[in-house]
Length: 216
Image (cartoon, rainbow, N blue to C red):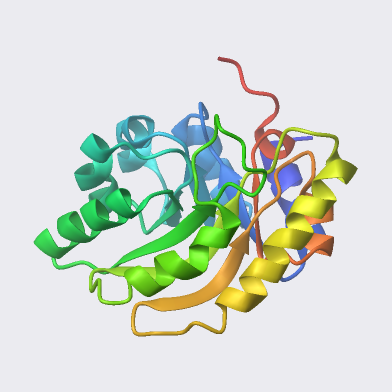
């Protein structure tokens, strides 16, 4: 199937769940094909890779979904509508600083290390409530969602992690403040997005099922 056909088939399957087309290593021509097919959000892993092709892209909503280093924050704030991979208080403070400098309210998701894996970035699930309390006075970020990457297991084995994320999401939706209004739960990728949707994802991040396997 073509990119066009893949996007249309997945959008039909997703219904009201939002699709983020994961465009790591994908050139602008193929990304534009997905946008013409109805995709409205793309997700890039690296700031520099996105910067190299952004001028060629059709209008769409741009999300950063990969780990963000402090020295790339200024450029990320300039380029992306949403930063999904916010994984520390230090990064939150840096995003706020760079966003304030250009008079922008940066939309962010908090990344949750739901499997408590030492090699992965993100907050522990039991830290999120405290983090939201600590950042309620920060003016130039707006926390709109939670994101997770579960342990690399079989699709069905990810279900328990998605269930825990949904419980956390429901709890955090009650913590609305001026800069906090959690409405999105970003979880599920090509291998397990159907299970993520069953467990309450509002947004899934799909790459290989649209563009094929990556060639690194």
